[in-house]
Length: 586
Image 1 (spheres, rainbow, N blue to C red):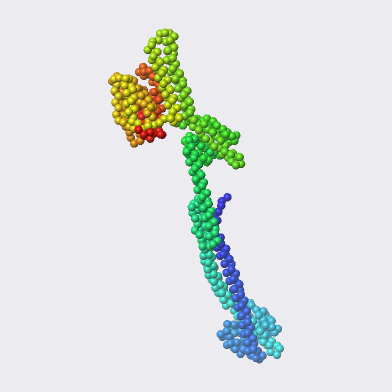
Image 2 (tube, one colour; image 1 turned 30 degrees about the horizontal axis):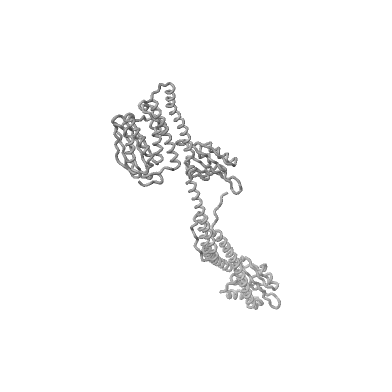
């Protein structure tokens, strides 16, 4: 159904006024013209009646004597300046005198409707078409009576053409006056319309602005009291709408702020699976655009069948459901997804709240712990087996027992330290201090001086950074120990320290045996050992670089390693100057 736009008030009222005015003018003109014709007819009839009465007196003597020739001459002279036509008719009906025509050319008038009543002594009046004058004419005939006998008939006639012309002229004048009156009425009507409609149009425009959402707009008050009351009511309504709209906007902003500040992803759908609300976290999890998701079917946005099935199950059962779901993007992410039906005041389920709890880190920790336990078991199994074999066979040497015991002790100590450190990080027990990096490195160098032997360690530069001193000491001990251990005799180890705008940078380089490219990506994993003869000659537990990576992560830093087999290794550490919380000045 097509809705037509309503016509303006002017085009609904003005044609009615114009039509009423035209009808009034037409009816008035017709009535006035008709009245004019009646008045003119009656006056003409009275005039002709008086004229016939006068003529009957003047012509009576000659009619008695039948001096018809003299009578015709007198009538013609008498009617020289008269508008009327005078005719004298004998009792037998033939014309004996006429003011405008020769009597011999005229027909017998005994059968004329105005003549017939006069022959019996009555006044005759008729309006008929005159064949003589070729026009419509009014005739008044009066009998001339002498000694009780009709001696003749005096008739006065007048053409009605001048009355018709006068009536037509009068009608045209009335029409012209009517048109003028209509123009005046139209002008007055338009002015009145503008006077009445302008406040209404202003009111309409203001309401349209309000309906479009401009609740700040206020209408100006008209001078008319009634319109002013309506305008005040509209302005009051606009103020209330503005307050309500601002309140709704604030509530919406608070809701969006709350949703965006949550660490969990949130999606709200209706029971037809259309997305009503989605926060940024959920959009990132599902790899969708937050602004384009609203109003779309969840099944058209994502391809995760487990999530879709969970939402549908909640809609069908109208009860809460929970499931662990893997989302695969750049890397697998594990989420505990809770679908909760939202009931309204009628206790009917209208919406479904979907909450995404990120359990990826928990899963990874659990996996890492399992791998660590397996690795620890594997690494401890070898030295334990050797010790057991040595004890059983009694062929084991004292040096071999001491070496295996030291390896076991190193692994256990590193494992205990790594576990304790990660627990301290999780419990936020670390205290960061603004410390000189060079001092810590020199302390580590002094501890390893006996191991370094003939290898030189050159330290250049200095920086003050917010660090946890004890754990950072472990970083430098492990990195320098690796550099010393895998460097050749008379090898050179350089340590550079510098800062830029917002970072403290440390670079440790050696000229040792290097690391194969395929092993670099795994080098920071717990218990990872490089499987080359040169690296296997050095006994180690494989936890040192894992400890280094864990400490740098706790400092919100980055560690990068570059190496070329046979030429050496370069380790670069970047620590933000802002550091962790609760920083103690140096």
